[in-house]
Amino acid sequence: MAYADQEMSGNKIAAFVVVALIHLVVGYALITGLAYEGFKQVMKKVTTVDIKKDEPKKEPPPPPKKVAAPPIVAPPVKINVNVAPPPITVVTTPPPVAPVVPVIAPPAPVPAPPPPRIQPKSPTPKGQPGNWANSNDYPSGPLRRNEEGVTRFRVSVGPDGRVASCEVTGSSGSSELDSTTCSLISRRGRFNPATDGEGNAVSGSWTSSVRWQIPKD
Image (tube, rainbow, N blue to C red):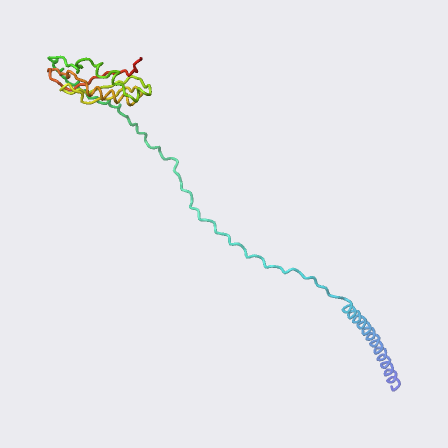
């Protein structure tokens, strides 16, 4: 009994020793592996430089655009295609009325004046009109400048037979010859006055001309 107990005790001790050795080996292996892994991690941290690239900042996305609600469209109006067309009204236009043209009576004829009892007469000169202005009346200025020409004139004769006024109707080219003509005729002219249809003396006019020509020696 004692020997058996001793044998059993010896086996247990041997088993404990074996287990302890296994634990030591396993622990040593674990410690050695962990130490190696730790050494690798330390070396990796020492030799590795963590270079981080500057990443561009991401801008936040724009807010979503508000989409307007579609307008409310009224439903289409129903068209009754079976509506009868409106009646056609025929308008008859009467023919245009012809304008009324008034009939204008011709004016009453104006009675002609009675013929004069005596034929009216224009004034007539007395004596010789050629003597009223002659070569002896030649103005000295035009004579010295050798000015010649014909002066036409018209005189107004009053009821007394005298010259009331004189007017040059055609110039001779010399104002001095023209003015001398009217001056001589107005001063020397004498006329039978003009008469009307009753034979009464009235004012009248008489026309003539004077040729101014330098006498030849």
